[in-house]
Length: 309
Length: 312
Image (cartoon, rainbow over all chains, first blue to last red; front, top):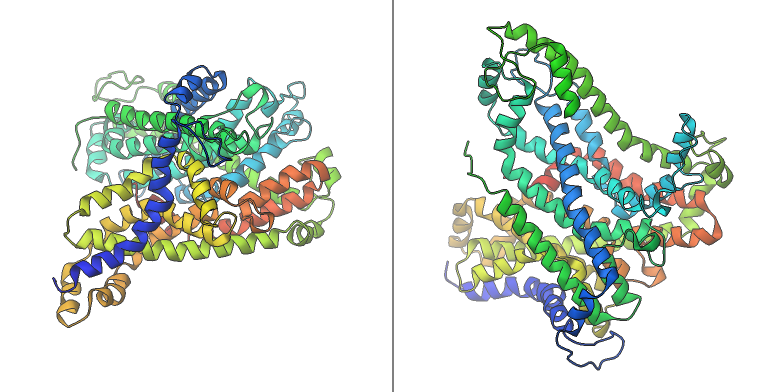
């Protein structure tokens, strides 16, 4: 297979590599470089300022708020989403009543649930965010009308307008839209666990609780861990940007009194609204560090002996 | 979890020698069949309840949106949950024409169509070379590609904006296509490299011995063999690109070039002043229904495509 091999390799790699370098790698390298300048993004001239942007960032109250919110997202969202999804997936695949001689089965109608739960996953996060923005509307939204309908009319929260509630409201939407994906993902993982394991456990009289913690969870651990990281990266990155920017009030989003501002949104505002491109990239570098640190911590905490089966 | 626990205890004592479950008390040789059955019954009520509640929580907002899209503005605000007095189809036609939903659809189709073809073509070319050929730098290029999966896009966006501006690609559909392709390559290359490794080498070698060039072998032998992988990764990219919001928001601000998600958000912002909420809901549902319909029809393939990368 030597004839013309290198010409072929170069020919096939040239275009993809060029596109990737020009639009992905090069901007990443540039952004780290820009974080050491005073570039506004508007003029071609700029000077090096060393670590000025970084020290400014450490004094920036709004940066700390966005960092705090982003970290909350990265901790709470995977916890809730993965937890709920594990529970649902277990019910759908293992939790059912024994029937027709099968040792383990999902509850009745499990394939129907799997289809329905996945719905939000195929919708644009922008559409989901818009939909919930209407639902949360304090005066005429769907949620407060339901409260009124069931006789809780006295409780009419402002939802997205309430600085204490806004962040939770946004997180609920992200959970709503991602749980289905993990249910299906974990279901696929559970399907690959050999049935004899369950049969043996059931023979020993284990209940579903024990079965879950002693068999399902340990054997599913790799999938859970990668799901955890995936959810955390979503929660730190593009998805949180979209929901916060679209749903929450305030100039260009960010909630009342910056109560929902997150790191990616703050980068966007600094760069494209305030004309502080260099400072924006500095916050972006902080976001990169947080993301990588998050992945490293999850991998470190999640390290277990790998179970082969 | 807590409720499961009490439910189990309430039923009796499931005899579990395995031990450490909180609800388990040891009893001397219980009748395992009977207790298991009783436990199953209570738990089934509970678990079905929770599963049904979540199903309702998923479906209700979507049904609500469909219903609202057929109502007039006044009843949207006065009685959000009431059925429409009649089906206001004019909301839909107004959204389609006056609110430019037709333009947004067309733009999205063009951008996603172009970038999907490009992503699959360039992604499979790169993946094939990386999976099948030994050459200096192979590993490096592979890790360069897959490294892109873990970086936050937002960090690159600021310089990318100016790269696009300098190349006169800003606010153009073809510029957006190129960017979509570039940002789809990491996962596509990652997935397809693994896939090409699993394909048998003998067929490609036979074709090559028969005198086919490397290029011809790739297009006529390997690509057709890789079809299942291409479909999976194609669905993954299709949904991602169809639903993309961040990239067009920054790189494509020309009003007539907007894609669906971006156009809808823009509409929502301007509706705040014009007050055509029914039209906006019609637009939302219009954007929702095609993907939901496609998902229900190709449900298996979609799920396989979206979860393929994450399961071993």
